[in-house]
Length: 232
Ligand SMILES: NC(=O)c1ccc[n+]([C@@H]2O[C@H](COP(=O)([O-])OP(=O)(O)OC[C@H]3O[C@@H](n4cnc5c(N)ncnc54)[C@H](OP(=O)(O)O)[C@@H]3O)[C@@H](O)[C@H]2O)c1
Image 1 (cartoon, protein in one colour):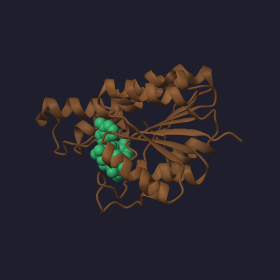
Image 2: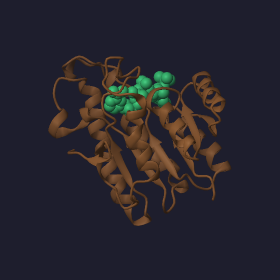
Image 3: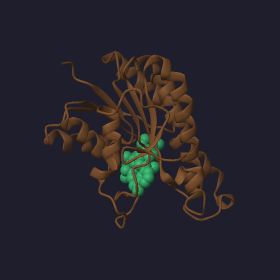
Image 4: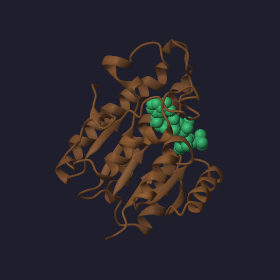
């Protein structure tokens, strides 16, 4: 059997790092991408010490040139990506009123969390072929029906935008047999979630890894938590 290839953004720590580890354990080769070379290579060394098959490529999701450079490097070596996981995100402004957030803060958040994932799928689309899977790591905070409130309004908006992108990409890629889904990993103990969070990184990675491997290939255009559909 050919080794399956997965690309993960923001793979140097937190949920992204755990996803790389879990995918490695089930036989994937992971292209671990990160915006900082030193942090990315440190993560690669940790995974290699655990005999996980992985390689590092620099990719800053807020920088179009960086996405294009990553595509040049990866497409020169791989004809297909079996899995593309948009995991990287920032949560910079946590106060309760979106109108108090700075323009810089809003711009960086939307570029990193929403436009970056869309540009990545667009630029990497020549490597997405029948059976490839795209997973956007979203958040319950992006849910219009449950999440709109005082929690981190710019971050929440970026995840609502990401969910809309998931729907559009799912529609666009359905005919090519490429599912695209959003995942809410739950509240996870990472630098972003904080140590008081209720979930381990293993639990946070679980649905993402399931969508990357075992989930039905016709499951697309959904928002999922714990392998079950949730409301947008
Ligand atoms: N933790 C939670 O409770 C929770 C809940 C719901 C959803 N999520 C989502 O789960 C995903 C992973 O979050 P996490 O909890 O693992 O957070 P984390 O520990 O803060 O990790 C975030 C990752 O994203 C990377 N990143 C940030 N900006 C980037 C950029 N411009 N280009 C490339 N990489 C960038 C970070 O890199 P650096 O190390 O260089 O900063 C880091 O690797 C995110 O999409 C987040 O929104 C998390």
